[in-house]
Amino acid sequence: MIADTLVIETAASACSVALLAGGEVVAYRHDPMARGHAEHLLPMISALPDQGRAASILVDCGPGSFTGVRVGIAAARALGFAWQVPVHGYRTLDLLAVMAGRALQAQDRFLVVTLGGHGEWFVQPFVRNSGGIIAAAPFQSLQPAAAVDAHGADHVAIGSAAAAYAAHFPDMVFLELAPDAREALLLPADMILPDAQPIYGRGADAKPMAPLPA
Image (cartoon, rainbow, N blue to C red; front, side, top):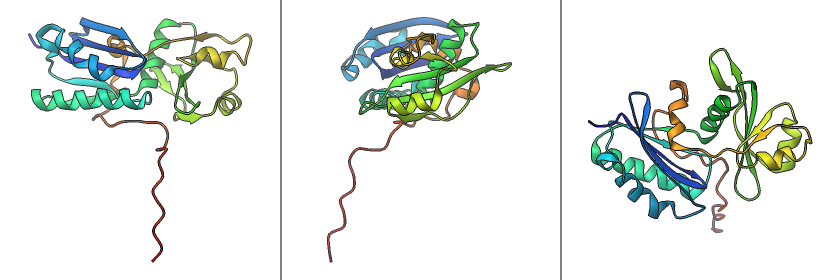
């Protein structure tokens, strides 16, 4: 029996894949790694039952590691084309927020803070309401000092930069979390993206060349 969904997670410091069926995780692989996602991802998928074959594919679109995001999306698109199945996406920060919402049931305000590029942090506030965990504002890529000034201590800090953020506020609660493919089960329908487009979080470092003089 083909699984409902293959989930691909390569946007952070781990590579994980999961097969979901009937609202449950039926197979899972997870390897922590700072780099090497491209070499590990397809063998991990092939090691799943039926070589990971599923009726749809769900992939982390970022923001996160520039290379990791591209590797995951490229693999998802290639498999989707080969299997002729739909490919959908999700945002890294959304997944971390719903993971935190389950882990910290007594909390209702979360600030997801993850490591970005060039010393910046990806930052986004979320709140818990009657409908679940929702974003309170769009995500930003900010220098640490700017992030601290913008968001203060009125949240629980979540993510790979949570400890660094909370160090500015001695009594702040924080939880270091990393995105995990099997936790995609937690994502509500409105956090699923209709297609898989990369979300890099900051502009390209390279600048176009100035026009040559006539």
